[in-house]
Length: 324
Image 1 (cartoon, rainbow, N blue to C red):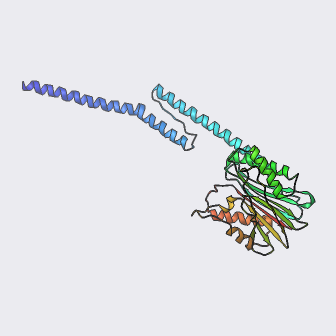
Image 2: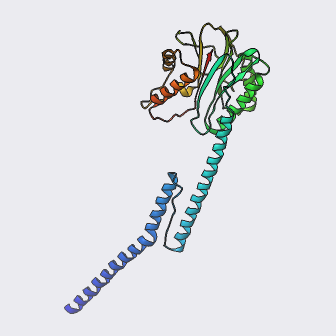
């Protein structure tokens, strides 16, 4: 009887041992055939999600997992093609916007220079220098809300509206009124814009300006402290029947005008401090004899030093005009 029980126990132990060995073998096989390939797929998808579209999913497992790997690779390839197409289209859009920038050659009685740095491939800032009859010049800076292609398209419309309105009137207030009416008509609600318009007459030494909610321009006469041109009204795209006011200033001695977008005044450093307006006025006072291009270079260096490597979140546009 004892021998029988002992034999039975040995048989049970052997069966259990075989079961453990079988479970271990099955676990190893499943890990090699399923778990490891799936972990590889997860790693590949994480790489794709982070922007690495060069990753390739591989497996030597069963037909079903091989099919899944093929589908992941096909998806990655399609995303790569779409990204390349997007880069090509954005580069073309960037070139178009660059070609719309005004030329500063051949200006008489006025020295103009600019800084234009879109935060993305294309930006929502627009600036222009338009010659007018009798030796006058229209200086313009606008900032469309938002970023990217929609803002750039709205900015392109603004350029067309300003150019057309400037053919009918030389009054900044009347031009703004006309531009606002057309902007409200053609641009989708919610895409608001700010704009500063200045008509400079180097011969008569006069400056007339109007403002639709834009950063107030800076005016420096001779060695005086820069002052703000603070006449302004409602931003563009809110009310169709908005009528804008303007102010005319007699200019005496050397004249310097600086117009900026809020991408300048609201630039941030590493400590979340803003560049502000005081630094603009201080820099203008520090280099009273600089040319327009030299002053732009001073601003460019100042902003780069201030940001200290922090990426700009908004378009940076700055226009300097000096009467010569």
